Image 1: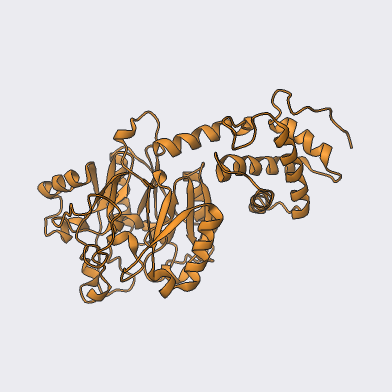
Image 2 (image 1 turned 45 degrees about the vertical axis):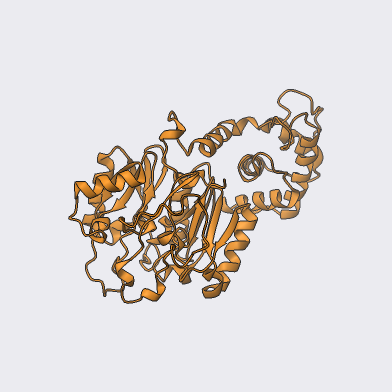
Length: 422
C-alpha cells in the first residue's frame, strides 16, 4: 500500500484530503473510497456538531457515531476497523497545532466549514440570519436544559430510564419538576418569553373537566417552584395550554381553541391584542375543531405543537393532518403560506398508514441543536426522520421509541419543558 509523506504542521493538515492519506498510512486493510467518504462525513459531523466547542472527544463515542452513520447509509463496515481508523485520526489531530477542541482556535475540516458556520449561527441567533437577537422570539433552539416531571418515572419507568439515558448520551442536561399530577409538563409550565422572563397563565383544560385530579396548578401544587424572580407576576386572565403555543422567528402560532377557552368569539381582536401583549409578540391563529369529545380519535386538545413546528427562517414543518382532516389541513397551510412561510407537510408513502401513531412525529423535542424524534416501529418512521432531518440539517437528530406514551395522546414535546440556564 502506498505511503505518503505528511507533516501535521503542513497547510490544510485537517483537510479531508490530507486526513485520507493519514488514515491510509496508518491502516493495513483496504478502505474503499465510498466507505472513506462516508466516514469522513460522519467524523466531521461528530467533531463539529456532536462534540462542538469546549468538550473533549473520545474514541468510543466517535467510533460509535461513525458506525451508526454508516449503518444509516446501509454501509456494512466492521466496527473494529472503524476504531482503528479513528485512532489514527485522533493521533494525527493531536499533533496539529491548535486543532484540539479545548484550544482557543479550532481547526475545522474544510468540507464542514459551512456547516459549522451555520451551527454557530443557529446556536447564537435562534436559527435566524440578519435579525437582531432582541427581535427573536425565544424558541427551543436557544435552550440548553430540559425538565421532565417526577411522575414520568412513576408512571412509565421504562420510558423514563431510556429517555434519561439518551439525555446523558447526547449531553443534554436535565432536571425534574416535583409535585405534578401528570407527566404532561408542557401544558402547565410557563411560556418562556426570554432568558429571564416567563408568562404564567391559568391551566384549566376542558378535556379534563371531569378529571380535575389530573390538573396540575403550578401556583398551588408547585408552591416551591421558583424558577424565575417574577413568579408572583401571575396572569390569571389568560387560560391556555402550553402545548398550544408554538414559537417562531418573531411570532407565536396557536390554534383558535384559545378563543373558546377564554370565552371569546373566534377572531376576537380585543382578546387577541391582550394575548399578544402578554406574549410580547404577534400571534398567528390557525383553525381547529373537534367533531366529538367522546370520539377516541378526535383531537380534543387543540394543541398547535401537534400540527406545526418552526424550523428556522421562513420554514415550517407540518404534520400529516391532511390524512385526518384534509379541509382543515388545507386551511392551515393556506393561512401560514399567506403569512410568508414555506410549509412542508409530512405526508407518508406507505401501504398501510398507521394513524394511531403517525400524527405524533411533529411532537419532537428540540434542545439547542439536538433533536429527539418519537418513533413507533412502523413504516412511517424512516420517512418522518428524513423530513425532520431535512428541515433541521444542522441538528443532531436521534429517534426514540415511545408507543406507550403516544397512545395516550402526546409525545416528547408534551412531556418536556426546556429553558436556557441562567
